Image (cartoon, rainbow, N blue to C red; front, side):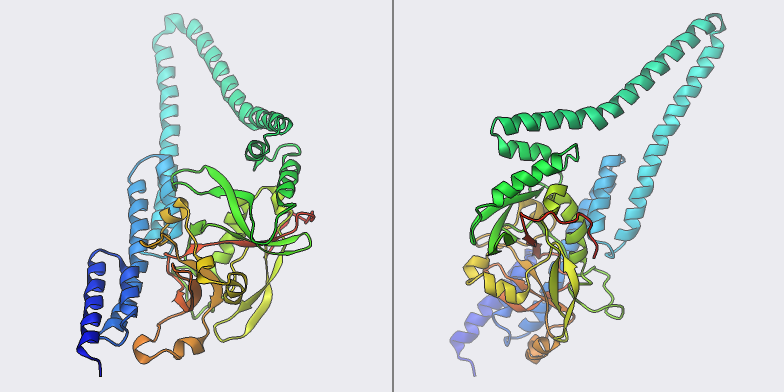
Length: 428
């Protein structure tokens, strides 16, 4: 039997949670309802808020993509495709991707048609000016030759001259001791021995790294999502074994759901091996963040993949991965250590940020065992598949969160060996 003081306190929390819902702060409202699970319909409201948080993030991304798609130019359509790709399976996102692709074709076709129409008009003008036909023909031929030479010149300049200019600038920067500037210039250049030079710079940066220190390795967008500019990634050294090191990004770099929005439990189970996060980290992220010279250092690590029934899958080998629940406990000894800030880029793609301390939520790779979910009370029984994660106060949420939630950020982890010259070929 609760006393009047407890009831009044619970009522205040309950009403505050309702105000948070009105302000569309669904994740914070869910946290408030979780404080009073046995009061009125707080448990039900909590689950509703979690779902509304997922839907709200999806709607925000959908609205931004829709706004980009409304502009009839190639750049806007490409941005719309990028955003709709993030929410495949939600509403008509898949169809909108195809629509944007068709619009790009239409724009390009219109440009081709305009050019063809211009050529046709020029020919008609030539026919009407028969008296000056020879002079006009000679002029047209000369103009076409100049245009062709200009087009070929631009292509050759971009393909050969620009990389050569960047490479020469990097060599001068190295000679002047401007190593960080040289690294930025060489990263992703793929010209002559640029990858070897990136490898040497990265190896030198990592040589004296100790557990707990911060190192620079690779580059990834960290500003506004409309910018493609990349900044060096800061990593925390979690473990060192000889020349081998386990690193985790200091900041959360992006935000994605653990499984696809249209995940079908009748087709596959929730696991790290089948997750969209694993595919993204070892394809798009890997190729965006690392130069070929750095990929040499990334080890293909055997991942112990726990399944929802408590069994383990040992078939997975990845270069980039997320920490497991047990690793998060092993390498971070306190909640404070586990707190993490998200980059502006990650926030732009829906990463949730706490209003207190501005820490974010971030995924672990461990699915929640069915027994853990079933042990909760009837009022708080969680529906659907869930994966363990870390909350904004750094606490490990062992009961996890829904696999399609887009508010959780991504902190990649890698095992590297600066003394390694591994084969660059990657296969899952």
